Length: 272
Image (cartoon, rainbow, N blue to C red; front, side, top):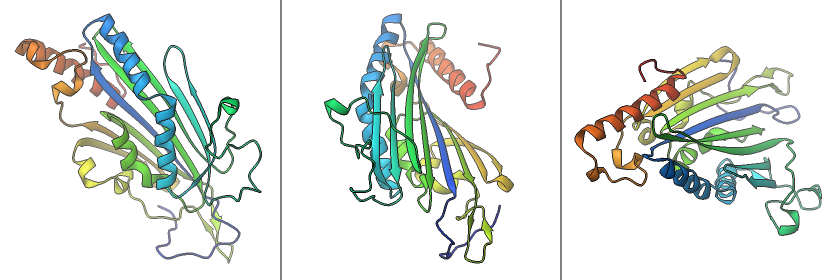
């Protein structure tokens, strides 16, 4: 798995290992009509607008022990939003901060600032989507957290999972580069990890079926998660479960299961 150290290691220069976490979340919903699908997209677009996403990423930054240098955010027409945060491992004194950075303070005259990426960054993009073929809507959130130094994006996993209605989760984690100790010895990773699951709470893990695919020699880790139980009322939009017949409920559950299975395994089922 590479050289690790459980005790604090004296490094030459600074820790320049890059730790990258890519995090995809899918929320699945059943919508019966075209009008319901339109309303669902509008609901998701409002619920996860750029301001709320900014709040979530700012909290992520706090959890991993970093400081915000710059925020750029944008809502899109007809739907979707993006947010980029430039962060630093330690708080940067005000006199050192580049004038183009807003330190997270957004004002009307600075609303179009473009976030540049330097040492560490956090980004999020949303993708509400629907198709009339099976009456299923999906909402995808892509989050990337990239850090250098001792701070780790893995600390924020439970918070991120809990911040969204996470039915399907795909997580990629990679440690890149190397850092040297005082003797010039290269260290390609600075923490112990067997699986991304090591950094997710037992309570959260118990709610999901999980698959791991890891390349330990390259410090590449991949985990997929699919919710175990479908509580039908949580997946109905503008529909009440009691208004459905037993046959209709079974059909909807089958459609939800089919959609989740396709996304989880990255395949199209032939029997749809």
